[in-house]
Image 1 (cartoon, helix red, strand yellow):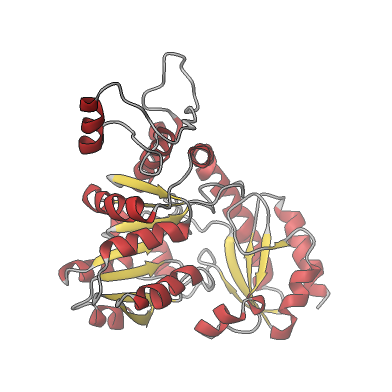
Image 2: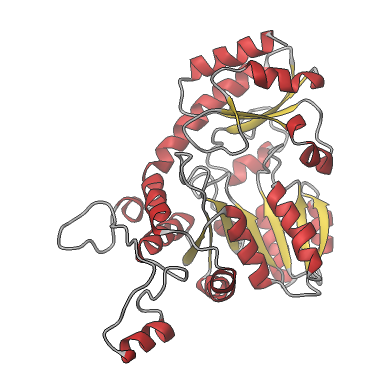
Length: 377
Protein backbone atom coordinates (compact mmCIF):
# COMPACT_ATOMS: atom_id res chain seq x y z
CA UNK A 1 0.00 0.00 0.00
CA UNK A 2 1.26 3.49 -0.89
CA UNK A 3 1.07 5.05 2.59
CA UNK A 4 2.76 8.24 1.41
CA UNK A 5 0.04 8.86 -1.18
CA UNK A 6 -2.65 7.97 1.33
CA UNK A 7 -1.46 10.01 4.31
CA UNK A 8 0.50 12.96 2.95
CA UNK A 9 -0.39 15.88 0.73
CA UNK A 10 1.49 16.20 -2.54
CA UNK A 11 2.10 19.96 -2.45
CA UNK A 12 1.23 21.57 0.89
CA UNK A 13 1.18 25.35 1.11
CA UNK A 14 3.91 27.28 2.97
CA UNK A 15 1.92 26.65 6.15
CA UNK A 16 2.67 22.90 6.10
CA UNK A 17 -0.90 21.74 6.70
CA UNK A 18 -1.42 18.00 7.18
CA UNK A 19 -5.01 18.13 5.88
CA UNK A 20 -5.91 19.67 2.52
CA UNK A 21 -7.80 22.96 2.47
CA UNK A 22 -11.45 22.98 1.43
CA UNK A 23 -11.85 25.01 -1.75
CA UNK A 24 -15.47 25.94 -1.10
CA UNK A 25 -15.85 27.87 -4.33
CA UNK A 26 -18.18 27.27 -7.25
CA UNK A 27 -15.88 28.94 -9.79
CA UNK A 28 -12.30 30.10 -10.28
CA UNK A 29 -11.47 33.47 -11.89
CA UNK A 30 -8.65 34.38 -14.26
CA UNK A 31 -6.59 37.51 -14.83
CA UNK A 32 -6.59 37.19 -18.62
CA UNK A 33 -8.40 35.55 -21.49
CA UNK A 34 -5.23 33.65 -22.34
CA UNK A 35 -5.13 32.06 -18.87
CA UNK A 36 -8.81 31.18 -19.09
CA UNK A 37 -8.46 29.63 -22.54
CA UNK A 38 -5.42 27.61 -21.45
CA UNK A 39 -7.36 26.27 -18.47
CA UNK A 40 -10.31 25.32 -20.67
CA UNK A 41 -8.17 23.67 -23.33
CA UNK A 42 -5.43 22.07 -21.24
CA UNK A 43 -7.14 21.45 -17.90
CA UNK A 44 -4.14 22.95 -16.08
CA UNK A 45 -6.31 24.91 -13.61
CA UNK A 46 -9.80 24.48 -12.14
CA UNK A 47 -12.52 26.48 -13.84
CA UNK A 48 -15.85 25.42 -12.38
CA UNK A 49 -16.50 23.04 -9.49
CA UNK A 50 -19.11 21.04 -11.40
CA UNK A 51 -16.23 19.88 -13.61
CA UNK A 52 -13.35 19.90 -11.16
CA UNK A 53 -12.29 21.24 -7.78
CA UNK A 54 -8.86 21.16 -6.06
CA UNK A 55 -10.17 19.45 -2.92
CA UNK A 56 -12.01 16.83 -4.97
CA UNK A 57 -8.87 16.32 -7.01
CA UNK A 58 -6.92 15.42 -3.85
CA UNK A 59 -9.43 12.65 -3.14
CA UNK A 60 -9.33 11.41 -6.76
CA UNK A 61 -5.54 11.20 -6.78
CA UNK A 62 -5.44 9.31 -3.48
CA UNK A 63 -8.10 6.80 -4.58
CA UNK A 64 -6.28 6.25 -7.89
CA UNK A 65 -3.06 5.52 -5.98
CA UNK A 66 -4.89 3.09 -3.69
CA UNK A 67 -6.41 1.21 -6.67
CA UNK A 68 -3.19 1.25 -8.68
CA UNK A 69 -5.01 3.24 -11.37
CA UNK A 70 -3.78 6.02 -13.63
CA UNK A 71 -6.65 8.30 -12.66
CA UNK A 72 -9.98 8.47 -10.83
CA UNK A 73 -13.11 10.59 -10.96
CA UNK A 74 -15.47 11.40 -8.09
CA UNK A 75 -19.28 11.70 -8.16
CA UNK A 76 -22.14 12.56 -5.86
CA UNK A 77 -23.08 8.89 -5.27
CA UNK A 78 -22.08 5.38 -6.22
CA UNK A 79 -25.05 5.13 -8.55
CA UNK A 80 -24.02 8.41 -10.18
CA UNK A 81 -20.53 7.02 -10.77
CA UNK A 82 -21.96 3.86 -12.33
CA UNK A 83 -24.49 5.81 -14.41
CA UNK A 84 -21.85 8.23 -15.72
CA UNK A 85 -19.57 5.32 -16.61
CA UNK A 86 -22.25 3.37 -18.47
CA UNK A 87 -23.81 6.35 -20.25
CA UNK A 88 -20.36 7.51 -21.36
CA UNK A 89 -19.24 4.16 -22.75
CA UNK A 90 -22.48 2.73 -24.18
CA UNK A 91 -24.59 3.67 -27.20
CA UNK A 92 -27.95 2.56 -28.56
CA UNK A 93 -27.66 -0.97 -29.92
CA UNK A 94 -24.82 -1.94 -27.57
CA UNK A 95 -25.12 -5.00 -25.37
CA UNK A 96 -24.07 -5.46 -21.74
CA UNK A 97 -23.27 -8.82 -20.14
CA UNK A 98 -24.36 -8.44 -16.51
CA UNK A 99 -23.14 -10.98 -13.94
CA UNK A 100 -25.84 -11.48 -11.31
CA UNK A 101 -26.81 -10.97 -8.56
CA UNK A 102 -25.84 -7.31 -8.50
CA UNK A 103 -26.63 -4.24 -6.39
CA UNK A 104 -30.26 -3.19 -6.88
CA UNK A 105 -29.34 0.29 -8.15
CA UNK A 106 -27.09 -1.17 -10.84
CA UNK A 107 -29.74 -3.72 -11.78
CA UNK A 108 -32.33 -0.97 -12.27
CA UNK A 109 -29.91 1.25 -14.15
CA UNK A 110 -29.12 -1.46 -16.71
CA UNK A 111 -32.54 -3.09 -17.03
CA UNK A 112 -34.76 -0.01 -16.78
CA UNK A 113 -32.89 3.18 -17.67
CA UNK A 114 -30.42 1.95 -20.29
CA UNK A 115 -33.01 -0.36 -21.82
CA UNK A 116 -35.11 2.73 -22.64
CA UNK A 117 -32.23 4.00 -24.80
CA UNK A 118 -31.75 0.81 -26.80
CA UNK A 119 -29.02 -0.88 -24.75
CA UNK A 120 -29.57 -4.61 -24.40
CA UNK A 121 -28.52 -6.73 -21.42
CA UNK A 122 -27.75 -10.42 -20.96
CA UNK A 123 -28.17 -11.42 -17.31
CA UNK A 124 -25.98 -14.39 -16.41
CA UNK A 125 -25.34 -16.12 -13.10
CA UNK A 126 -22.01 -14.68 -11.94
CA UNK A 127 -20.73 -18.12 -10.89
CA UNK A 128 -21.20 -19.44 -14.43
CA UNK A 129 -17.97 -18.26 -16.08
CA UNK A 130 -18.50 -20.51 -19.10
CA UNK A 131 -21.82 -18.90 -20.04
CA UNK A 132 -20.52 -15.39 -19.35
CA UNK A 133 -17.62 -15.99 -21.73
CA UNK A 134 -19.97 -17.44 -24.35
CA UNK A 135 -22.05 -14.23 -24.22
CA UNK A 136 -19.08 -11.88 -24.68
CA UNK A 137 -18.63 -11.87 -28.50
CA UNK A 138 -20.41 -8.84 -29.91
CA UNK A 139 -20.98 -7.25 -26.49
CA UNK A 140 -19.65 -3.82 -25.59
CA UNK A 141 -19.28 -4.18 -21.82
CA UNK A 142 -19.04 -6.82 -19.09
CA UNK A 143 -20.38 -5.62 -15.73
CA UNK A 144 -19.31 -7.43 -12.55
CA UNK A 145 -19.71 -7.18 -8.79
CA UNK A 146 -17.48 -9.44 -6.72
CA UNK A 147 -18.25 -10.38 -4.02
CA UNK A 148 -21.93 -9.61 -4.55
CA UNK A 149 -23.99 -7.44 -2.19
CA UNK A 150 -26.35 -10.00 -0.66
CA UNK A 151 -25.05 -13.55 -0.97
CA UNK A 152 -21.35 -12.67 -1.45
CA UNK A 153 -20.64 -14.81 -4.47
CA UNK A 154 -17.46 -14.18 -6.45
CA UNK A 155 -16.45 -14.16 -10.07
CA UNK A 156 -13.19 -15.38 -11.58
CA UNK A 157 -11.86 -11.93 -12.47
CA UNK A 158 -8.68 -12.97 -14.30
CA UNK A 159 -10.43 -15.47 -16.56
CA UNK A 160 -13.36 -13.17 -17.32
CA UNK A 161 -11.31 -10.02 -17.93
CA UNK A 162 -8.91 -11.94 -20.18
CA UNK A 163 -11.79 -13.35 -22.23
CA UNK A 164 -13.41 -9.92 -22.40
CA UNK A 165 -10.23 -8.29 -23.65
CA UNK A 166 -9.83 -10.96 -26.33
CA UNK A 167 -13.41 -10.24 -27.44
CA UNK A 168 -12.87 -6.46 -27.43
CA UNK A 169 -15.20 -5.98 -24.45
CA UNK A 170 -14.63 -3.49 -21.64
CA UNK A 171 -14.83 -4.86 -18.09
CA UNK A 172 -16.32 -2.76 -15.27
CA UNK A 173 -16.59 -3.93 -11.66
CA UNK A 174 -18.29 -2.62 -8.54
CA UNK A 175 -15.48 -2.83 -5.96
CA UNK A 176 -17.33 -1.36 -2.99
CA UNK A 177 -16.78 -4.57 -0.98
CA UNK A 178 -13.02 -4.68 -1.60
CA UNK A 179 -12.58 -0.92 -1.11
CA UNK A 180 -9.21 -0.96 -2.96
CA UNK A 181 -7.64 -2.53 0.16
CA UNK A 182 -9.01 -6.09 0.17
CA UNK A 183 -9.38 -6.26 -3.62
CA UNK A 184 -7.62 -4.39 -6.46
CA UNK A 185 -9.39 -5.55 -9.64
CA UNK A 186 -7.08 -3.68 -12.02
CA UNK A 187 -4.30 -6.06 -10.94
CA UNK A 188 -6.36 -8.87 -12.51
CA UNK A 189 -7.08 -7.21 -15.86
CA UNK A 190 -10.34 -5.37 -15.14
CA UNK A 191 -10.59 -2.05 -17.03
CA UNK A 192 -12.62 0.16 -14.68
CA UNK A 193 -13.45 0.03 -10.98
CA UNK A 194 -16.54 1.75 -9.54
CA UNK A 195 -17.07 2.51 -5.84
CA UNK A 196 -19.87 3.59 -3.59
CA UNK A 197 -17.56 5.77 -1.49
CA UNK A 198 -20.50 6.16 0.88
CA UNK A 199 -19.51 2.85 2.44
CA UNK A 200 -16.02 1.92 3.67
CA UNK A 201 -14.17 4.84 2.07
CA UNK A 202 -16.22 7.38 4.01
CA UNK A 203 -16.45 5.14 7.04
CA UNK A 204 -18.49 7.57 9.13
CA UNK A 205 -22.00 7.43 7.60
CA UNK A 206 -21.91 11.15 6.86
CA UNK A 207 -21.17 11.25 3.11
CA UNK A 208 -22.94 10.00 -0.01
CA UNK A 209 -20.41 9.72 -2.83
CA UNK A 210 -19.06 7.55 -5.63
CA UNK A 211 -15.99 7.17 -7.80
CA UNK A 212 -14.58 5.39 -10.82
CA UNK A 213 -10.89 4.55 -11.34
CA UNK A 214 -8.92 3.17 -14.26
CA UNK A 215 -6.83 4.11 -17.32
CA UNK A 216 -6.48 7.83 -17.98
CA UNK A 217 -8.01 7.56 -21.46
CA UNK A 218 -11.24 6.02 -20.12
CA UNK A 219 -11.43 8.38 -17.14
CA UNK A 220 -10.99 11.30 -19.54
CA UNK A 221 -13.90 10.01 -21.65
CA UNK A 222 -16.13 9.65 -18.58
CA UNK A 223 -15.12 13.12 -17.39
CA UNK A 224 -15.83 14.70 -20.77
CA UNK A 225 -19.23 13.00 -21.13
CA UNK A 226 -20.60 11.56 -17.92
CA UNK A 227 -19.41 14.27 -15.54
CA UNK A 228 -19.78 17.32 -17.75
CA UNK A 229 -23.20 16.49 -19.18
CA UNK A 230 -24.85 14.52 -16.36
CA UNK A 231 -23.59 16.95 -13.74
CA UNK A 232 -23.41 14.61 -10.72
CA UNK A 233 -20.42 16.37 -9.20
CA UNK A 234 -19.00 15.76 -5.72
CA UNK A 235 -18.92 18.83 -3.45
CA UNK A 236 -15.61 20.06 -1.94
CA UNK A 237 -16.68 19.44 1.66
CA UNK A 238 -17.68 15.84 0.95
CA UNK A 239 -14.37 15.38 -0.88
CA UNK A 240 -12.51 16.57 2.22
CA UNK A 241 -14.45 14.13 4.40
CA UNK A 242 -13.53 11.28 2.04
CA UNK A 243 -9.83 12.17 2.25
CA UNK A 244 -10.23 11.93 6.02
CA UNK A 245 -11.92 8.54 5.61
CA UNK A 246 -9.17 7.17 3.37
CA UNK A 247 -6.53 7.82 6.03
CA UNK A 248 -8.07 5.36 8.47
CA UNK A 249 -9.52 2.94 5.90
CA UNK A 250 -7.03 0.04 6.29
CA UNK A 251 -7.22 0.17 10.09
CA UNK A 252 -11.01 0.29 10.16
CA UNK A 253 -11.24 -2.62 7.74
CA UNK A 254 -9.05 -4.73 10.01
CA UNK A 255 -11.39 -4.13 12.96
CA UNK A 256 -14.50 -4.81 10.86
CA UNK A 257 -12.96 -8.04 9.57
CA UNK A 258 -11.87 -9.36 12.98
CA UNK A 259 -15.24 -8.74 14.63
CA UNK A 260 -17.29 -9.96 11.65
CA UNK A 261 -15.37 -13.25 11.45
CA UNK A 262 -16.00 -13.88 15.15
CA UNK A 263 -19.70 -13.16 14.66
CA UNK A 264 -19.92 -15.33 11.53
CA UNK A 265 -18.21 -18.25 13.23
CA UNK A 266 -20.62 -17.98 16.16
CA UNK A 267 -23.64 -17.85 13.84
CA UNK A 268 -22.41 -20.78 11.74
CA UNK A 269 -22.65 -23.03 14.81
CA UNK A 270 -26.06 -21.78 15.94
CA UNK A 271 -28.99 -24.22 15.42
CA UNK A 272 -31.36 -21.43 14.33
CA UNK A 273 -29.06 -20.41 11.44
CA UNK A 274 -29.23 -22.55 8.30
CA UNK A 275 -26.34 -20.94 6.43
CA UNK A 276 -23.78 -18.15 6.68
CA UNK A 277 -22.62 -16.33 3.53
CA UNK A 278 -19.14 -15.00 4.34
CA UNK A 279 -16.04 -15.17 2.07
CA UNK A 280 -13.71 -15.40 5.06
CA UNK A 281 -15.12 -18.63 6.47
CA UNK A 282 -13.43 -21.99 5.89
CA UNK A 283 -16.82 -23.28 4.70
CA UNK A 284 -17.16 -20.63 1.97
CA UNK A 285 -17.97 -22.60 -1.23
CA UNK A 286 -15.74 -20.45 -3.47
CA UNK A 287 -12.73 -20.57 -1.18
CA UNK A 288 -10.34 -20.88 -4.13
CA UNK A 289 -11.54 -17.56 -5.58
CA UNK A 290 -11.45 -15.85 -2.19
CA UNK A 291 -7.86 -16.95 -1.66
CA UNK A 292 -6.88 -15.85 -5.17
CA UNK A 293 -8.43 -12.39 -5.17
CA UNK A 294 -9.23 -11.15 -1.67
CA UNK A 295 -6.74 -9.79 0.85
CA UNK A 296 -9.43 -9.67 3.53
CA UNK A 297 -13.16 -9.96 4.08
CA UNK A 298 -14.39 -6.80 5.81
CA UNK A 299 -17.46 -6.52 7.99
CA UNK A 300 -20.47 -7.40 5.84
CA UNK A 301 -22.04 -10.83 5.36
CA UNK A 302 -25.43 -12.56 5.34
CA UNK A 303 -27.14 -15.38 7.16
CA UNK A 304 -30.14 -17.54 6.31
CA UNK A 305 -32.35 -18.26 9.28
CA UNK A 306 -33.73 -21.78 9.66
CA UNK A 307 -37.16 -20.26 10.22
CA UNK A 308 -37.45 -17.96 7.21
CA UNK A 309 -40.60 -16.29 8.51
CA UNK A 310 -38.68 -15.02 11.56
CA UNK A 311 -36.38 -12.61 9.66
CA UNK A 312 -38.24 -9.44 10.66
CA UNK A 313 -38.66 -10.59 14.27
CA UNK A 314 -34.94 -11.36 14.49
CA UNK A 315 -34.02 -7.90 13.16
CA UNK A 316 -36.47 -6.19 15.50
CA UNK A 317 -35.04 -8.06 18.50
CA UNK A 318 -31.50 -6.83 17.97
CA UNK A 319 -30.41 -3.93 20.18
CA UNK A 320 -26.93 -2.94 18.98
CA UNK A 321 -27.62 -3.67 15.31
CA UNK A 322 -29.81 -0.98 13.77
CA UNK A 323 -32.00 -1.65 10.72
CA UNK A 324 -30.57 0.15 7.70
CA UNK A 325 -29.83 -0.27 4.00
CA UNK A 326 -26.26 1.01 3.81
CA UNK A 327 -23.06 -0.14 5.54
CA UNK A 328 -19.39 0.71 5.99
CA UNK A 329 -19.68 3.13 8.91
CA UNK A 330 -18.92 2.80 12.61
CA UNK A 331 -22.37 1.41 13.48
CA UNK A 332 -23.56 -2.18 13.13
CA UNK A 333 -26.55 -2.77 10.87
CA UNK A 334 -29.06 -5.48 10.02
CA UNK A 335 -31.23 -5.75 6.90
CA UNK A 336 -33.84 -8.50 6.54
CA UNK A 337 -34.27 -9.05 2.81
CA UNK A 338 -37.95 -9.78 3.50
CA UNK A 339 -38.25 -6.00 3.94
CA UNK A 340 -37.07 -5.57 0.33
CA UNK A 341 -39.45 -7.95 -1.50
CA UNK A 342 -38.64 -6.67 -5.00
CA UNK A 343 -34.91 -7.28 -4.50
CA UNK A 344 -35.53 -10.71 -2.98
CA UNK A 345 -37.88 -11.67 -5.82
CA UNK A 346 -35.45 -10.54 -8.54
CA UNK A 347 -32.90 -13.17 -7.50
CA UNK A 348 -35.09 -15.72 -5.68
CA UNK A 349 -33.30 -15.11 -2.41
CA UNK A 350 -34.47 -17.35 0.46
CA UNK A 351 -37.14 -15.89 2.74
CA UNK A 352 -34.88 -15.98 5.78
CA UNK A 353 -31.93 -14.10 4.25
CA UNK A 354 -30.65 -11.38 6.58
CA UNK A 355 -27.67 -9.14 5.84
CA UNK A 356 -25.45 -8.03 8.73
CA UNK A 357 -22.80 -5.34 8.91
CA UNK A 358 -20.48 -5.53 11.88
CA UNK A 359 -19.34 -2.08 12.94
CA UNK A 360 -16.70 -0.94 15.39
CA UNK A 361 -18.46 -1.94 18.61
CA UNK A 362 -16.77 -4.65 20.74
CA UNK A 363 -17.20 -8.06 19.10
CA UNK A 364 -18.25 -9.75 22.33
CA UNK A 365 -21.13 -7.31 22.82
CA UNK A 366 -22.30 -7.75 19.24
CA UNK A 367 -22.24 -11.54 19.54
CA UNK A 368 -24.22 -11.32 22.77
CA UNK A 369 -26.78 -9.18 20.96
CA UNK A 370 -27.05 -11.74 18.14
CA UNK A 371 -27.43 -14.53 20.69
CA UNK A 372 -30.29 -12.86 22.55
CA UNK A 373 -32.09 -11.99 19.29
CA UNK A 374 -31.87 -15.60 18.10
CA UNK A 375 -33.22 -16.75 21.44
CA UNK A 376 -36.21 -14.48 20.92
CA UNK A 377 -37.39 -16.15 17.68
